[in-house]
Length: 190
Image (cartoon, rainbow, N blue to C red; front, side, top):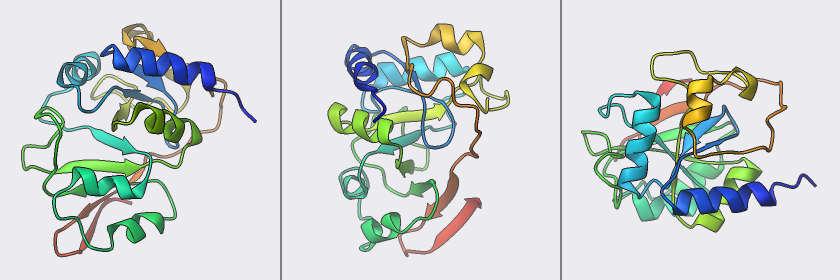
């Protein structure tokens, strides 16, 4: 078994102190923070030099958690999420409980239920949603591996996870779909 317990503890301390972490996901390395902490989210926007109009992705550990953060989700949402065959970020209408800087101007929110063991463990212990945005300056290419993340991003993170830094395999970003209140799914990024 891979041991990432010390990384989890360090992430919890950093996040609970309002900090930003640099961490691996099931897709690419991400910058993250407590998605319910407006000041921490502002730090992520600042580090990425990202316009605040461009919203961020939120990670949850379990499909059932979506119900807590989306008003009137599709009645079969848990089953829908559990049957995805690859990492999928879903844009939901009517976000609930997030600070203004996390929610898109139209009231929507992008959420992915993570399948990554490290992310799942971290979010379950954190007990709040985690921001996840690619570890690059806005407008720059997404680095495919940890080694290719810029020093600017690395030095701006309050904690860098050691787990999986040596991975050389690359993974594509998540599929992106919009789930309308009607239940219709619109694929935005396959």
